Image (cartoon, rainbow, N blue to C red; front, side):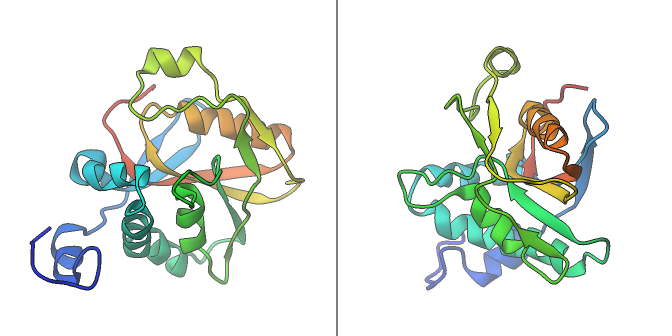
Length: 190
């Protein structure tokens, strides 16, 4: 970002000066609280890198600066961090699995390959109308009965992904306590 030579994808100076997380929350119409660390306008270009090989490194840096610190400071009940639709992309990684993995701590354990979209619909860059008309059709791939769950995604835009995932988790007798993302946009469904 500063164009100085670095062995890191984003140098330490830029990480410290330009990527300081600022925790915010959004409450969805179901009452589910979603915590985010950045405004999408601040890191949107970096998040778009998830559509490339470089995205693996950028997501790891952003997750280390935000979600990992959140997990290290979490002193509540034990949680399962479930990445939403953590299918591996053509670039060899799942962006939501990277984020969930960063939350691994004494109190938070990632639980991969749990809730997967059956429709194949991608919401990246799509309108609220498109999202409402094209459900993700999530499927649970494992038993989550009686588990306390934090749902993990990279961005919250309208909240429709979280609402649909929350409903599926509740139908599976799990307890979705909150959601967490790297970034939040200004578009809401409330």
